[in-house]
Length: 102
Image (cartoon, rainbow, N blue to C red; front, side, top):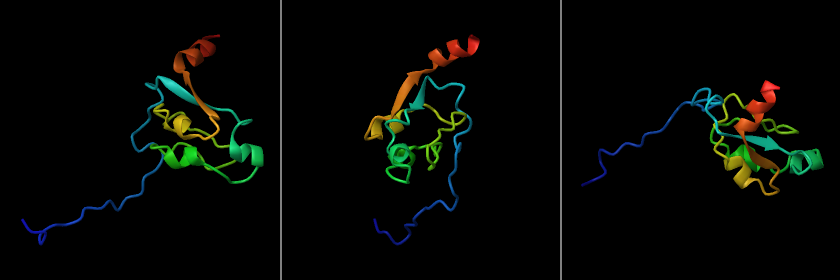
């Protein structure tokens, strides 16, 4: 087998927030940011943003403080796992559903 007819397939589109569609309604856990632990918030300058870098849905902003678009977040927890200071924790959605009822 040769590589003469091999063609590389590349994507020419740009990804953006919510490429997978709105996922907030079926998320089981929600990421919650603690600004007192977040490096950009503590230093008040662009630093770290590892959560933004690793988020597969591009729903974390690169702002101070970082914001998470919960409308498109699927709750995978990668941001919480990768955060070096553990400023992001995953909280059960049921807790927020109970608070909304009150």
